Length: 368
Image (cartoon, rainbow, N blue to C red):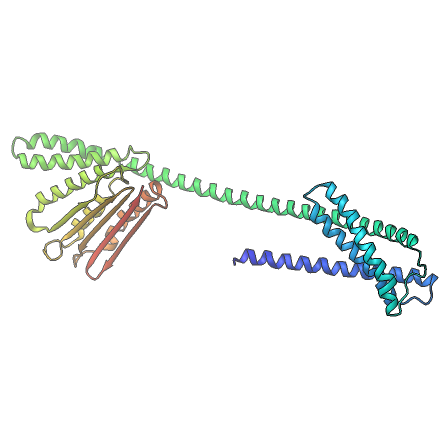
């Protein structure tokens, strides 16, 4: 049971106890009043006889309230019917109670045995106490409606406050997104300049080394991909496009380092419209090349991509160079990636980056 439910239960119990106490106090005052008035005309009246006289009337009062509550949803005709039914039942019980039960224990409430007089007195008493019950019923209903309205207003105020907080959070998220986009736009000049320069170098390199020109062209493709990623308003690209440029990055490094770097790269599953933030794989792999010890065949750079319908899993593991500061060096890229994931895949991704012995392991799961 939650804390709010427990508080509400305690509140209801206290409220019921308060109502019971008020009823007891009211009946005590009323019985004292009846006893005092009767004492003026009948000096020999006792408190016990007064209470016994009021007992059937008290029962009539609460039965009337019960019927009013029971039939309030069924309409006025059921209430009228219950009025006569309760009178007949209580008059019959009251007759036996007054003329047979009480005299058997030595208490006489009515000296007259005339049945007509009894019915008249019973009807007047019943109408009086049914009226009391009706008044009590409508007063309690008014209190309940007022309390329900108060609770409704509290809930409304609470929801309005929650909505206001949610809007503030949304505005904050939008502000952070704009700041993030602005930071990207400010960095546009360098990629543009490098891209144009690489295209020029590619044209010049064709005359001297086709292999070098091809490498420059691949680097130019990655630079263009970097520029294109700025134009994606959704901050999402297809996994196919990300994998194509990841392969370009691997090809460039293979050409750069030859066989001195050991790499295990695999893609499992089928492409089916899965999406990821741009440079989500490339950033991690680039850090692995930069800060990883990839010379030993027993500890290769391991890259695994598993594709499932509506889900992408990316795994990257590399041995850490003894001289590198793997975590501090890659924190900026991972922090940047985390912000982009929050913008494009809020609550739809799981990212883990940790160190195990001398290896750095990065895992990312993104759901579309």
